Length: 364
Image (cartoon, rainbow, N blue to C red; front, side, top):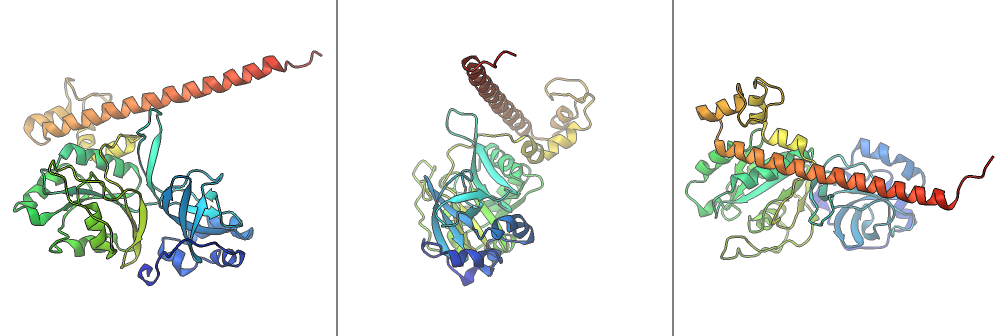
């Protein structure tokens, strides 16, 4: 069990320790290592290299949990690591040589001007969308976060925290459930322990990521689940909360598995979430299957089953508006990505043509 070890402090990995790691020791198994990972790592193990799980990324360095302890390694040439990645270390243990395949990835649109995705956590089994009940839940924001969670490939769930601050938590849960088809919606309180046993059972043995806005209670919930002494902060008077967690890191769960505590997200841009939107709005997709036209936009077409559902009250109009909004945003992000790829290809061909003019082929 993961509670039987601590991540420890960064250390230098010796060559003898590297050989031990290829056997898949209990430490790695507790972190999520399995037979498929062992098979994928086999070519590197034959070279005597080490493997571990990235627990934290800090600029150009990352902390990697290995059977020999936690090491600090540079990003190297193996790609940019993210918390939750399985990283193969160079022979001296100072850099990441390669990343094993990401089975899942929680990704949002980058905050930069570039049309790229920012991976928040990798190889996650369960994504908990954390929402505080001390303020009225924003259903549109929950739907946005669920789209990101579904698209990651992991199982999503909504956790309504701070149940001790309201008297109608069950009524709020019922409202949220209409916006979260296919996802569990749990009501918990870290103060009096309500719902924590159910949540702990759901998280046991898995890699769990917490996502949500600042002040939602993620760090308090993480501390309650892990028993770790995690820093928590008071919510601001405007209800937005402070960024208590300033980086993403792995924290062991007492019942097995690990938790990824993430910084509060002021905004979550959608990035390549077509599948995620289909799942987050599975009820609308279900109605859409009965539309007269296969390319129905659900705006004014005759025979639109989605509009009929709104008319009869089976589908809240607010939810359809949220669906349209997120679809438009996703399509815009996709168009920006396509433009960036076209521009990159044009740049590459320009370089090629310039090189051809500089070094023309010899005449026969």
